[in-house]
Image (tube, rainbow, N blue to C red; front, side, top):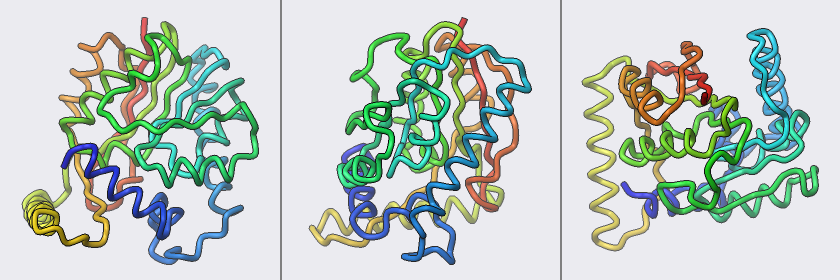
Length: 243
């Protein structure tokens, strides 16, 4: 699945039930309250920034990036801590929604990005980069490129925080389910039948992620278990800085 296929699926999610697609709690299908939804973003970012303070990591509060911004749930929350926040998403419908929900004016700026790079931004552009429950839906070939781009666009002394699964907890069963889903998706699109959008899950092994971050020019500060990918996946959240 390439970025164009990803865009097609997430644009469809953004036009059907976008808030549930972003936070897929079973009981919230077509039932998310907007204020409650954005409240979860504030809670997440407040907890994250408190952790950054406890770790005594000096981070400039000028410019931040929210990668996979969706409806702007985390982008607006980051705007309470940074002078300027840029949200990036692959789906036009999600960008439209983020702009409609935006309550921060020019502090939050949203960008459509339909390529496996962040070339819309220059080197050393951001003091802080955050990505949560996004890379897990992207083909690992492209996730690797995005991780490299995170490091490229991170300013020296900046902080990068991102989450990505490592492997399914029930590896064989998960791989079989994934192979069947991908094959069916390919078949439907080959014959021109538009199926319902599919939310694929992917992972990259922890050792490879750490190596990729180091080889891209950043230093790992910490790696911790992360449960946001659900019970079926072993996942980690990575904190890294750029010398």
